[in-house]
Image (tube, rainbow, N blue to C red; front, side, top):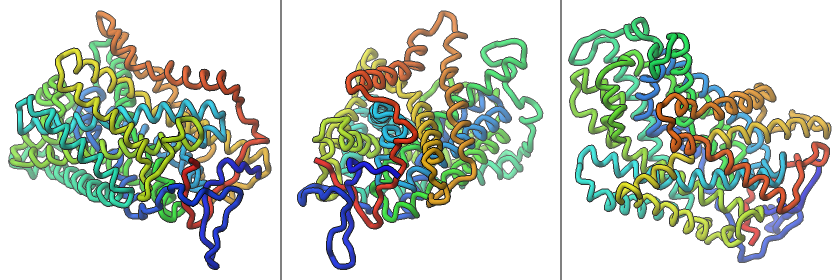
Length: 531
């Protein structure tokens, strides 16, 4: 396999106490990433990383758009595709956990310009989602405190909280996320059991629903007033696909922690498998039981979706609880949604700072962002990302400032889809290069039977979903120009990044025969900053 010294940034201590290196010995005072994330922490972060407002709040819109059967099929289909994407990413991560995730894989397996575009696109998505989640958390609090003047106070408190957690180091970040992930998983399991009890008539109203709503209104026959009904059913189902994709979004952020995972080949392999089976099952069972307990056209659900409060009042679980006569649980769910939003903001601040670190390591961002403190935190990268998190205060301003914030938040909507497609293309080319170079897949420490067909399915289906993401803007009268821009602006942004870097640096698509397919990981080693 070909070998490039640019990636040899790891070292390990031998039994004799000497330092074993391949080509590069980092300077003694160079900081390094700490492999402090334990297997249990990574598995929990992987499982709960995507469980958030998309499930607790957004699932109600999926039910209204697609009906109980359409919502279930949409989440099941997208969940399986996301699982295939994670298997593609997992094969590459476990093979080379010393690499900078999909940012570096895009550079090595496609084109350095693609690594530049993918990295900055992901960074922008993550750095803008952090203030969105913090603002969402402050809105959730309005379930109890309706005074809008207090929103800035709540944003400040939570912003300081996530910055301190990230400054403390990855060891403490892992413990913090482990606790909140545990809360989310227990809550989802509890809600699934609660919905099952309600469906079987065990709630105070003693209404045994069974599959009543599946028989009465399985799909949305009136979506946007489209006729005939068959076309309305399909368009409603398609709306579920795009929403499910956004609900599963962020799962790819697991690649950001591979540089700080202890025994990464074991822990990352376990985490990837956990995502496919457990996340999809949790989502699918939750959507299944929501559709059994709540009608697609329930007036409480339609009103909640129209109000779009961002609090537990919007949650289909809360609507089920309230209409069934169950007390107190709605406040508990709101508290869990609050912790979920706070945890998500914490994770996205972490992911954005690590993405900036990885870009700097590759020379695609100012080198100062690759500098690391003694506790393994890329402090300058974290400082810049924390400054962007302050954009959340725009939501406290007048109408114009709030609209600007909402617009910035919306332009990140295609981020995960673009990243997933890039991961699929990287894997396809890596797979082909291994065949061209005569390398056996039996060497891989983690190998999926779904490849290469899984990666092809990811690229094709998510590309179709991405291009038809904003189709509803063409169905509104007058034409919703602002929504159209926010739905698609990511695409020209990525093209500008790619071709701009390609022209400036005169890069080329990496030939399969010359591709660096080797692993640069050394057991029990750490990743040093190059600068």
